[in-house]
Structure formats: structure tokens, C-alpha cells
Image (cartoon, rainbow, N blue to C red; front, top):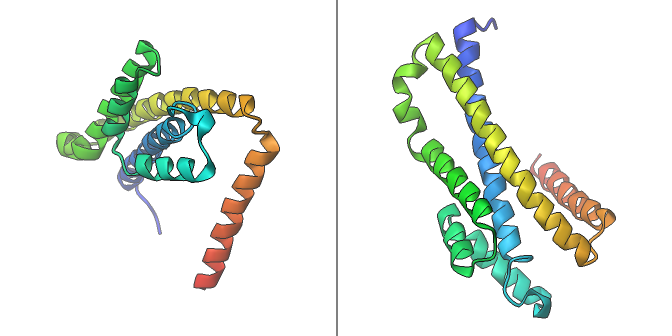
Length: 170
């Protein structure tokens, strides 16, 4: 199959849109994890069941609700709150309006070129916030005795479960 330049560029827009939404979701889930651990009230008194319940509650919240929880508890700097708020606005724009608002641009080469650039910028913004949130989470975890080996073991369990589930579907 030969893909012409226009088709390739269209696929690139769709792929970058998907990647941008992936990174937005990473930011959202990082907030969930922090609100269920480092930024949870009375975290030092929690037992595993408390953590699991709080995690389930936070997983059901929207990105906007997570931000409201953060703001109401005043747990983070104003700068980080503003950064999260700006990321939320971009995420909501992508999820609800992006292709509608870019319908004209999407039909022409120059417009898709602009969209590729714009989506790459959004990916960088999401990635930058996620790295900040991950650093906060990692620092908190280190203070609580979480090691790289423990994190690797958890990741290995996730991979093993995915492989098991996949192999059972074949």
C-alpha cells in the first residue's frame, strides 16, 4: 500500500492527538496517585484498605474535580496549581473541541502542519507537568521507603498480568 503525503500527514495528526491525550491522562492519573498518597490527609495513619478506598474514589473523579480537591485542601503551591489548571484547559479543549475547531485547518496541508506543531507543543506541556508530579511522588515514596526495586516489581506484575490476559484471549 502506498501512502501519499496527505494521507501520511492526516495519520500523523491523529497519532499526535492520541499521544497528547495519553499524556493528558498521565497527568490526571498522577494527580490521582498524589491525592491518594503524598497529598492525602492523615496519610501516615492509613492502612492498605484506606488507601485502596481513597484511590478508588479519586479514580472516579474528573480532572477538574481533582483540581478542585487540590485547591480546597491548599496542599500545593499557587504556581503548580496554575500549571495544572492550564493543563486542564488544554486537555478539555482537546477532548471536547479540538477537531471541531480545527475542521477547516484539517482539510488543507498547511493547516495539518500547524496542527502537528500545536499537538507537539501540547504533548511537551503535558509531559513537563507529569514529570513534575512524578518527581513529587517519587520523592514522597523515597521518604516512605519505596525503592526502585519495589517499583520495578510492581511494573513487572502489571506486565505479567497483561501477558497472561493476552495469552488467554488467543
